Image 1 (spheres, rainbow, N blue to C red):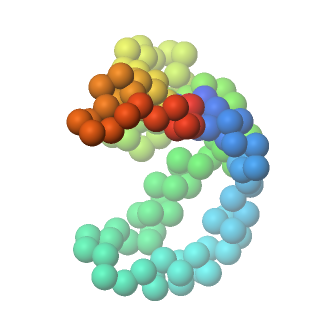
Image 2: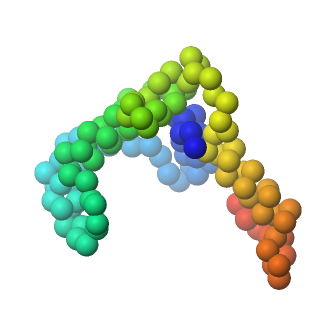
Length: 121
């Protein structure tokens, strides 16, 4: 599954009550965020907080900077790449969700009717 910045921005546009913030708490209250993270108990294989921060720092960067240049998240390299320079053959996250919902609407499980009230993406 591919993740692109346009897909994420589109989700926020569809839900105007939500907005992309500046991630002030993440950048400026790291000690408090680390304390809260360390309070999450009973999670097997929970990564070290420094690893989570390094990952999130790279992932939220275009949103914190309000950069709407189309980018594609490369989970192998843990970085955003210019989406216009990549071959984007795989469907986007939103396209995959839409296709799955359409298939479910057209082929509901036995005993269920088609649900027209489901929100559109």
